[in-house]
Image (cartoon, rainbow, N blue to C red; front, side, top):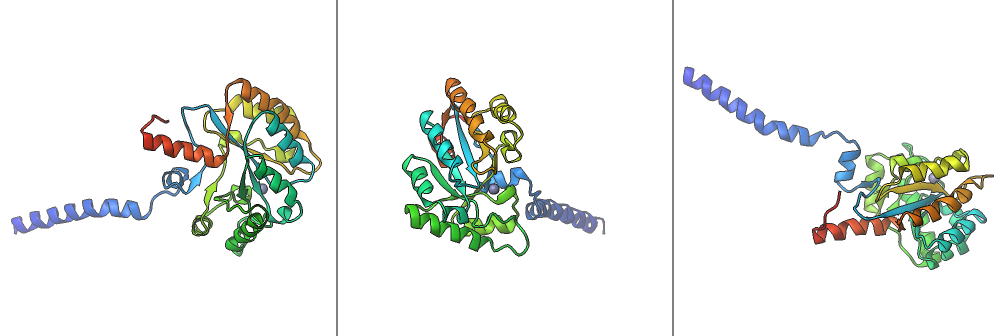
Length: 250
Ligand code: ZN
């Protein structure tokens, strides 16, 4: 009897040891680290090099986008524009200019609809993708959901459609959409900047020139500090090539 009990206890222990990791793997905590490690969502790309990615959402806008493009050109900066399909349809020339000047185009839905149970994410992505392709001949690979709101379904649909979900560095949310004042936008970026940051701006803020005015200070200062401003895809690619080469990264 004693032997049998020991055997039973042992079996139970072995079983629980075997089962435990399976259980934890089946229900991992789906926080930022979970999505980041799987490479499904990008917030930033820490690197040893002085490179950062500036991103502009909700455009194109007939006046502001043109002014932003002028400034980017002046300071030899490349950026990523997360465009909204129904605006792309109205201002196709700006899209062509963005591509011609070396910037990256990315998808920010067709109607700027926030995630909801009934939202047709696939349709939102595809309508914008078709427009961008029709105007520029380019297929983009990055998707940013409005408000940065995502769930598993959104990530899965984006993936199926060939997109990686890109958000922004938490310390680089300029909140320029709320017109907080040019100085606050400038400070948010310059006081927090770290290698590999993804900075969030909007090229369409109704009735506000603060983003453009802030860039007049931010761009020359970043250049002065030795930062190279690259597209998000370049930032992601940079990390991949460093991993392949076995270069250190943090
Ligand atoms: Zn947006």
